[in-house]
Image (cartoon, rainbow, N blue to C red; front, top):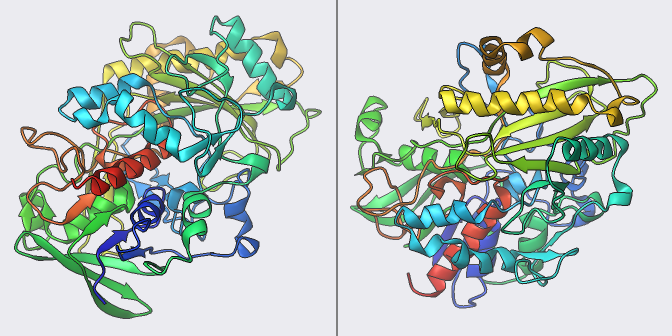
Amino acid sequence: MKYDVIVIGAGSAGCVLATRLSDDPTCSVLLLEAGPDYPAFEHYPDDLKYGYDQTASAIDAPHNWSFVGTPTPEQGAAMPVPRGKVVGGSSAINGQVFLRGVPEDYDTWAAMGNDEWSFVKVLPAFRKQETDLDIRDDFHGFDGPIPVRRHPRDTWLPAQTAFYEACLAAGFPDDPDMNHPDSAGVGPIPMNNPDGVRMSTALTYLNPVRHRLNLTLKANVLVRRLLFDRNQITGVEVGSGGERFIVETDRVILTAGAIASPQLLLLSGVGPETHLREMGIPVTHALPGVGSNLRDHPNVRVPVKVRDDFPLDPKAPRTQLAVRYTATGSGDRNDMQILQSSFSSPIGGDPLEAEGIRFTCILELAVGAGDLKLASTDPSVQPLLTYNYLQDPWDLERMREGVRYCAQFLEHEAYRHIVAERLMPSDAELANNDALDDWMRRNVTTTQHISGTCKMGPASDPMAVVDQYCRIYGLEGLRVADASVMPDVIRANTNATTIMIAERVAEFIRQGW
């Protein structure tokens, strides 16, 4: 059978696009997913269902691709990069933070030559995806598929309340609505997990439309490469159950994420000509930007041992609040975020046992960028991910300030009945810029918000992979519609924005773009 459109990757974006495109009963949609499918909620695995479960993104967890980042000499060990391998993708294993970023993120995209992506133009797509259970105004949705809520103050855990009080004492303002355009300060994080259930795009978008006769979902199918006749997409080669198949179509939308989407393009001969020839891959279409511009939120963690008499509940929320602020001397609003998490059991790959609580300092708008390259022509072999964290002096300076804020918070009296000791960095490292930089470079890791590897831009940008309608330059019938098209990572967790991108691309297709 020849499908009107094939969507590759049933993740945060793919479930949305398959749902919206199949709204048209005359359009046959095939949605392909490498991981398993759990159509019945009563059979949904607990690690996916319960948002406070710490195992879904652990190393070698059953629904995790378990990618690794190439370590810097200072890091030493390879860096775990969790990505969801299941219908729902990373929205099925993530931390359920439903932040949008700041309007300047999208206005910057527009200023780069992508005028369809200004904040005013993307706001309707943000509203369309959500039902905000707490706030009803012009900036929030009230009839979308994804429920969004915040932890009410009377449910804040003691350590979270201490964090809030310490942030206020440090001069940060109260921020009751982090998705308001003027948001800044400390407050409850908007989350898509009412009653602790992680509301992935599989549960919220896909499940209600599974009955559609024009929508076909095939799970446990690995797409090996895209097929072309000159510059026209003609189908995909897939593997499943030890066999290979070819599925024909004139339209493909890549929604495999910021790792797998560029990987699949490279495997199909679309990318930097030099790298393709190095790998022995025939060049279908030279496109130098594929795999470059790897953006992320680097973070460093300040772990704290709690007092023996301080209770920790493994089933309680790990994070309820965050503070977003503008680094000293920065012209980019809200370029930093600090949150506090509770851990009462070890998580995969963590060298520390259950330390108790941990501050995470997140650089929301890093200067540094990395890249993605193939390690093999075998699609089952992971690509090489180079992040280049904390190589820029401005990135170091802002992160340094964030770590010192964490130490300052711990001096607040609200922590006296909670904290036994700060485990790292040491006082000596905190007191010396060079020593603190060394500690940060050794301990920096990913916030799991990889993006930018198929960046959107005008035709005048030689590194742009897609135009502002997410159509790949120089090829017909092929789009990318996931976090990889972001020109730069937004100043927030990326899930809500990835869903917005899918909603926006579905609109473009309906409008004939």
